[in-house]
Length: 72
Image 1: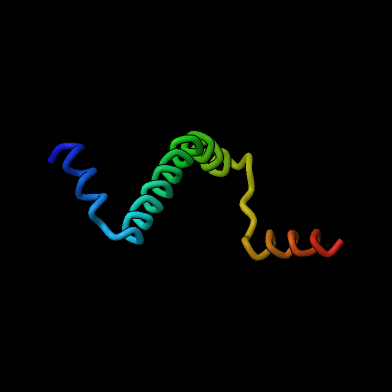
Image 2: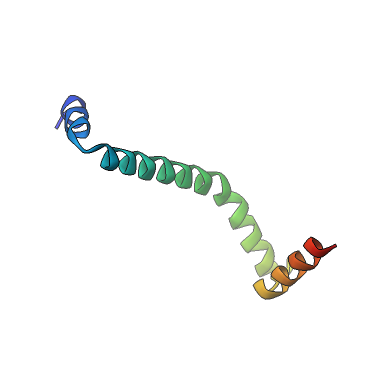
């Protein structure tokens, strides 16, 4: 199937389906971009935790801290 065929098939879809497909494409493109950007940083953080240079905090503690900051 060529790009022209895909375009024609896309244009024949109802507008709601076109919008849904475009939304999925944008979201997945953004997700892939962020994953590519953050992959090295996340690997570095995992390595730091494994070496004992960085500590993990339970999510509940982090949320409690954030809530207390919002109240201030």
